[in-house]
Image 1: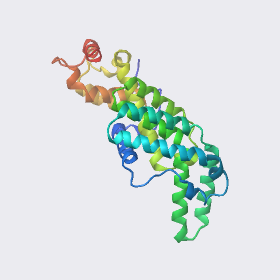
Image 2: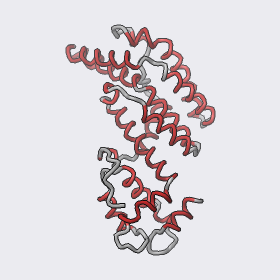
Image 3: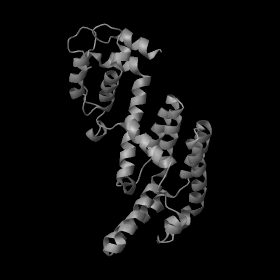
Image 4: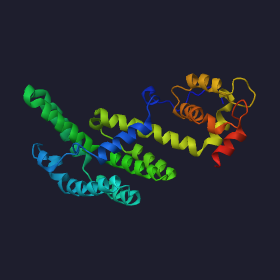
Length: 266
């Protein structure tokens, strides 16, 4: 295998500390200063769709999310996971098109509003966009709860399902959502690399091992990091090997395939 060129991804995700971003999101979720989901009273400002088509579902989501928060705070994670699964099911019942349409309407209204009112209208547009992203956000939270319990295989699957959600452009235009989406993308790749480490090491050692001695040392990993930019799987593999080097290395000058197999089987 040559220098990686496939599996291209935006460079912005390569520098993300995905675990930190997801953890920050979960802390803000569990200990909110403000609930970013659109509430029923604010929905009365919106002309049409979201208010009428999502009122009942939003009400049930608020109740279930409150239960998840309380369970997460007291570290009752299996019960939090079960409750969050119900939130995911409710999120899938939302009329996302109506929410996205109304978010666009509110952004257009904000542009035409006087300065004193525009900020409030933009905030409401952001809240609508966050709610439109609920099928993704709630799956991201479910995956985070699963990770807290060490359920890496299930979290990988859940994050993969989150990434399949077709987010409306109005949602991805909100920095908070775009950042969380990038973090889930990277964390999903990290979990895939960890699960398939021996196979990925064997498939990539040819281009990482510049000295051709069958081993990978720190300097080769530093060099490989430059070549791997733009390929998310390759860059994730190199970062994972670098961050776990001391745990993988058995005292020999470099990491070989046997070291990887021993480390992976622990």
